[in-house]
Structures are given as structure tokens and as C-alpha cells.
Amino acid sequence: MSTTALVKSGDGTTGGDQLIQLVSFMLSNEEYGVEVLKVREIIRMPGITKMPNTPHYVEGIINLRGKVIPIISMRKRFGLSESDYDSHTRIMVMDVAGGLTGFIVDAVSEVIRIHSSEIQPPPTMVSGNIDQEFITGVFNHTDRLLIIMDVDRMFSPQEREYFGSAGE
Image 1: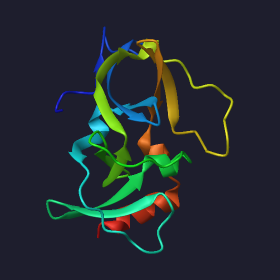
Image 2: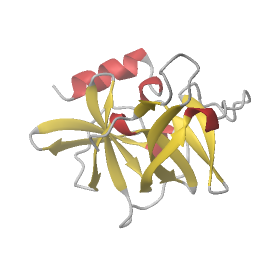
Image 3: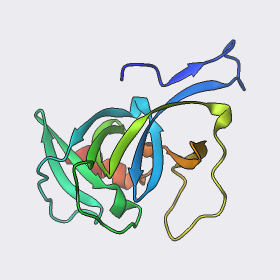
């Protein structure tokens, strides 16, 4: 995954169409995508050490080659019903606010290349009580809508500070 996520087409002037690479993943039968450069690696489910006094969506921590990484349940973070882990469940280790954080997803699908002009802005309506400013757009992918996320905007400054200190 060492390819460039954003490749400018044309002369690189503003307003030009860009080729964007996204890693798509499944969560409760919905497809999401994050910029490929945010994803450091994708691993199978290891044993997770529970931590006391953490937010409800923090599953715990893991040791990944000598580095302690907090693990977030995307289902819990989005207020979705929990499900048992299966052979498709993965942890996507991503760079969030300068530190590594693992996100539990139901399955990782593929790397998708799309043009920025194909991305539609997210609808202004917000469902439920989830702050959805981390949703940056929607893409019609093989007759399904892929929700494009910015993981840096998923957490408040206090949460980002917590995750930054969790691995120390």
C-alpha cells in the first residue's frame, strides 16, 4: 500500500479531478471507505486486553510488534448493535491524529480508485444522535452507496489526546 492516495489528473490546478484510492470495509451490511494512506495495516483479531475506565467504544489495547495500540469498536462508536467476531472480522490499524489506532470492522473489502468528481457531498440530514461531520462524501459503488469517512474528524480533541497518550 505504498501507492499515492491522491493523484492529480491534468495540470494540477485547483478544481481539477483527482484520482482517490480508498480502502473499503463493511460494518453492519453498509460499506465505508477511508483514504488508503491512513491505513497502516490490516490484521486478524488478536487477543485484546481490556482497559478500565475507558469510553464504551474502546475495546482495549493490543501489542503490535512492541507498540501498544488502542482498539476501537466501530460498531459501538456508531451506536450499532454488536455482533460476534467471525473469520472476516479485521482490525484496521490507522494513523489518527499522529498516533496509531486500531478499528474493528466486520470485513475489509477492497481498494477502490475513484475520481473526486464522482463523490457526492453527504446529505445535510443527520440521523440519530451521532455527530457525522467525519462523513466527507458518498460514492455510488456497484449499485451500493459507499460512505467516505475522515477518521481524523471522528473524535473530539479530548478523545484524540486520550488515544495519543494511551500508547505511551
